[in-house]
Length: 242
Picture 1 (cartoon, helix red, strand yellow):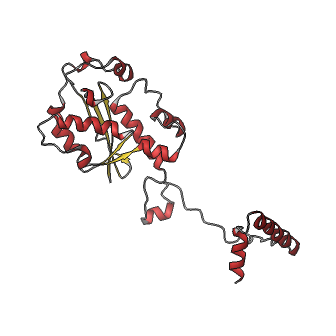
Picture 2: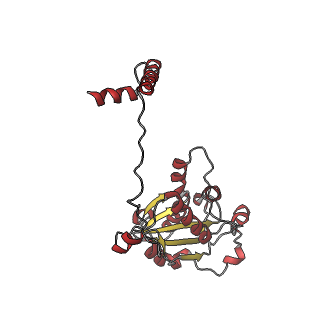
Picture 3: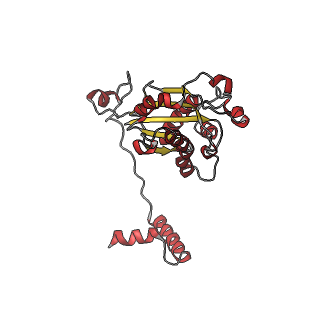
């Protein structure tokens, strides 16, 4: 599976107010492994950046003066993302801005979410951690991911951090080997498979006494009475004896 972790920086908050994309950062991941095949580009927006936005990402109008425009690299960008699964934190923001940029062109480009599927990690985080803060910084703290080098927002930097967060959120093994080698060493290089010693003494099973069983049954009956006949343990016992 080819996944692309994507982030953008913009001149402001609303494309409907004429704000534009000024940085695109993408990190490629195939089968949950980062490939190093990233896409990163600063863009000349042909408008001033809001001061509030500059305070967030630190990108100045002067820095972007000689950068290419979105139309100059749209073909390369669309070729890069086409067919991939985009992973974005607060996807409506970035997708909305990218689609706005595409609409400003000659009309020959489809919407970004028409050529890529999209996973919103903010929605995922809210489902996993309801009622908690789920910003990228908050998720880094929750999953013990270092972001100490993130003094300002940056599209590529945030995409790299989000890749780590996404892998932590989705959890589990990142690779599964069913080869003979994997069966021999459990997938850990240099670590032999440790087998249980067959000469070890058998495990002693201590069964409940008749008195203990009677006390247990009396307790279940009390629970059944308090729950108006809803004690599932008594129901299970009845099913087992029938």
